[in-house]
Length: 338
Image (cartoon, rainbow, N blue to C red; front, side, top):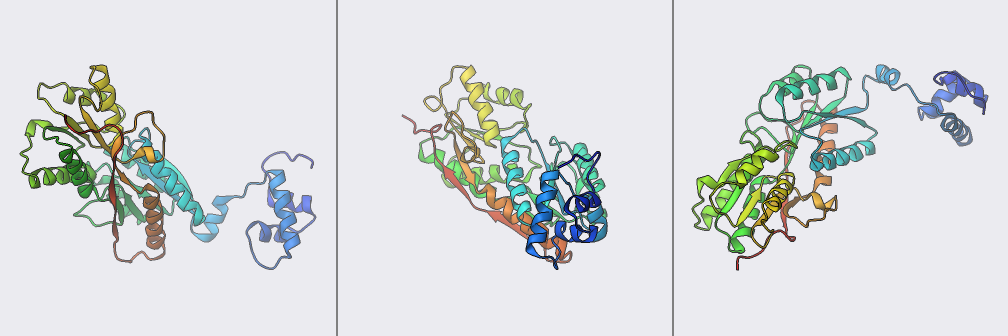
């Protein structure tokens, strides 16, 4: 097939196939009225010649771009990568593509990410909010952009959301450690403004109270939750207060705990038990079998896409806030006290 200089256009495919531009357009846009052999021939030639359709032109005709933005807190965190992969797979099933943006868990960066998404004329946005401000949410609202919150939600500002049952997850983590005989547990919490961090801590504390264990306030420490949080985590572990177990806000934090403890010569689980949240190892194999609180991350993507498609089709539909089940996944970083 002879090369064509520049980007291929419909008329180029028409010339290569011997069909009219109108016939080629019907085939490439899956319109009715063509013989199967004709459609197949045109599509085959288009593929082999490297034809790429003009999505912008199509969006101007239809009023939609068939694109959604995914805005996440820290794409260095494997959990967010897994969530993004699930969302993209679910979007593909409904004929959508995605753009991925990072907020760095910073409210100003979140506003910039929302601005970028809106400038691309996306049909909707999936947002894991920083929750340090409402500016990004307000910007979406003012522009009438359909939005589904993922992983976190605002109790006092109802928006469609899909989150995990973080309170129950915190309870499960505490009950697991209590059943192993641990009473002095260092709880490394995320920022209290983050709904998942707050509810995990509340669930953990509720289980401790129900068991008659008076938690030492000094053993509840807030740490950073991004890639640069290692210093705050190491500081929380270095205090004089003794603990036999660590409950970390996330697997991402738990891995940094494992590294810091190892650097100090502390063995896991022989000296200290460690439990995380998110069960990243159900998707990514790691050398250390971390005990964690698991959740169905694929279901999050499927449910979130379903909510966004409904919100696009029915802007006035009732708000849906979905909580997905959490469960204990016991592996090798927790053990009973001798």
